Image (cartoon, rainbow, N blue to C red; front, side, top):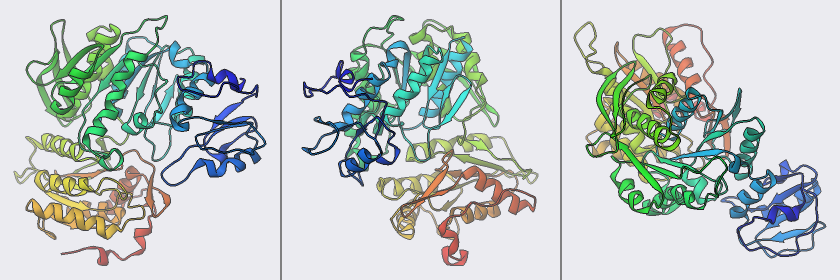
Length: 532
C-alpha cells in the first residue's frame, strides 16, 4: 500500500504532501523492522522510539512516523501530533479497516474480562456464528490459537488490526475483543469499530498508571463512547452497552454516560437481567437468568458468585445485542470447561484441593477467596472438621503500591492461612514489598508465624503452603494464573504457576513431576526467608 493511502480516513491533522512510498507493513520496534515497513516512533515509559529511527532505517524502513520535530533522514519522516494515538488508525488503514466487516463485541472491566470474553465466544459458536476472539491470553481465529505474549494487556494496535484482518480473510463474521484500561488510554483499539460494549466491574487497579480511580474509570468508559463513532456496517450496528447493575461505582457513571441503547445485568432486584435461584457446588454454579423477555436455567463449570455475574454479562450481550436465543446462550455457557489459570485445579492425587488463579487485584482476590469458602460449604473431613483456605500471593513491583496492603488485608480476613511471596518484583526490593503486605495483614489481626508467613521465593512459598495443608483444605496460588514469566530486575524469567504447583505437589507426594522453574530468589536459603 502507498503511504499516502494510509491517511485517506485518518481522523487527525497531518501534512498534506504525503509521498508515494510503498509500505509493506508497520513496526514499532526497530529490531522487528522488515524491508519496506513504516516505522512508528513512540515515546514509552523506559525508552523513546525516536532515538532508534536511524536503526529502523538501517533495517529497511521505507518511511517513519513520529511526533518530534526531526529531520535529515534518508527516508520520508511524517510528523504527527501523537504517534501512539495515530498507530491504530494507520494499522487499520493498512489492513483495509477489517473491523468494518465484522460485528465487534468489546469486553472491559477490572476483573472477569477474560472469562466473560470466553463465555461470549462459546455462545457465538453455539449459535452457529463464525466467530473469533482476542483476549489477554490468546487470539482464536478458526482452528488457530495464537499466543498473545507474556505480560500483555490489550495487544499493540498494529497486532490487533492484523488479527482482525486475518479473521476477515478466514471468513469470520464476529469477534470478541477483550480490552484493558491501558489499551484504551493508549488508543490501541480506537479503530476497532465496536458494536457491543460490555463491562464486568471497575474496582481498584492501575491507580499508579491512571493517576486515580476517576481517570481509570474514564479509560474504561471510552469503550462505551466508541459505540457512537462506529460507522454504519452492511450487517447493521447493534450499538448496545451492557453494564453491571451490582457494581454501583461503575453503574451510576455508565448509566448516565452511555448515549446508545443500554441494558444491565446483576444479582440485585431491579436489574434488567437478573440471576436468581443460585446454587454453588465444588463442580460449578447453577442459576436462572430472568428478564421481562425470558427465563432460562443455566449451568456452568465455573465456580463462585462472581462467575454468575460473568455468565449474566455474556448472556445479556448475546441475547439483547445479537438476538441469540436464550436457550442457545445457556448451551454456550455450559460448554465452557474452564479458563487457563482461572480457578484452575491441579490434581496429582493429593487429599486437598490445589488451585491456580489469576486474582491479582484486591477485588479479584476477595471474590476468589469467597468462591473457595463456598466450595468448602458442607465439606468436612473424617474428623468432622471443615477445610481451610490457604492463600499464596504477592504484589507486583513498580505498580500500584496501595493494593499491596489491601490484598494482604483481604486475605487476613477471608483466608485461614496466608503465605506472602513474590509476584514480579521488578527492580523494587522484594523484602520491602513483603513488609508493606505484612503490615496490611497485621492491621487486620494477622499474626506472623501463626496465620501468615513471608516466603519470598514463589516456588518455596507454594511448597510451604502445601506442607500446611490438611485433608479437605484448599490451597490457592493467586496472582499469576496463565502468565508465562516473572520479572526480577529487568529480566523476564520463564515461570508458570501451574507448572510450579505441579512441581511442588510432586515433591510433596514423592511422585514424578516437572522441575520447579528457576527464579533468582531460589539462590537465597529458605531459612533466611521465613520470619516468625
